[in-house]
Image 1 (cartoon, one colour):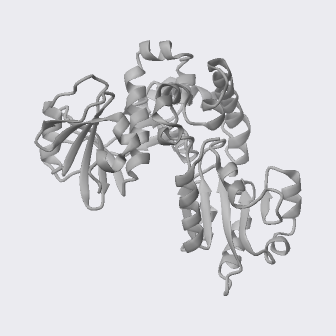
Image 2 (cartoon, helix red, strand yellow):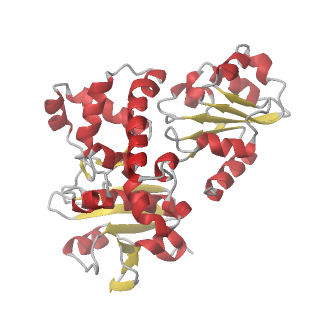
Length: 385
């Protein structure tokens, strides 16, 4: 059993200060397991909308919910978007007899009714699969290969893990998206998703993908936004500084789970991963996700100019600008790109995250930081104390 103490604490704190808390994240990421630590699944306060009994109990939702006390859990809320207006009414009662924890597999942008009906009442907590800090750094290679989805990471063997990811993708395309109201043919979206895997770590090129798929560029953008909204893909936005230099204004694409990326790339083992042409890009995206989980920045971007200068991550945290470069090398050195980024963006700190085990000064304001340190002691790694 892997203890997810940090996310549990986030949810508990959110429930203390907010009337409705949305715990959202991809399917099979552990939302239900976490909710069951707060409310027993057999309790009258727990409604699982994938269970016919749970749906039946909410046939008359006001009657079912109005008399409850304490924390009320509604799992897979996207199956009953008509509940949001009622939740607004119930959340506005004074005194407040119950707080609501709603679980969903789509972002608030896709669950538009929730953001409209519960504006000012809803706090959102995002959960992903296991982070490296949760499973322990000793499991780093397995975590990178299999990804963080609990049943993929905990599978007994690599073939079992791969089989789970294959089934996950199939179910996601054929059932989950349909339940969210999207009627895109599964083979079409699977083809797009597979093609997108080859853009991992690169700038999004909608025109090229549209030509390959034989659809319009707005259609490709819609597919991308859909996969982003269900937490499969991260669109890393570019930073636009007020500089004379021509800056890149196209988002970079990263898969949020390395295991799904590897499945779609046909990577089946650690040996295949290390020799694959996308190994470096996979590592970069994997570290990006772990850094974002560790730092929890207020805002984050990448930065690049058309002259070739770039920065993998620009993190804004507590009024500070932290630059992050990701290098899969034994002893990274200062590059012209790092110097340009540090000067042009007025960075307070530039951390070069690499897989070694020694922290050392690269140049003024530039530190080589072991990846392990980011995971184990994020405060020290980014001087956040």
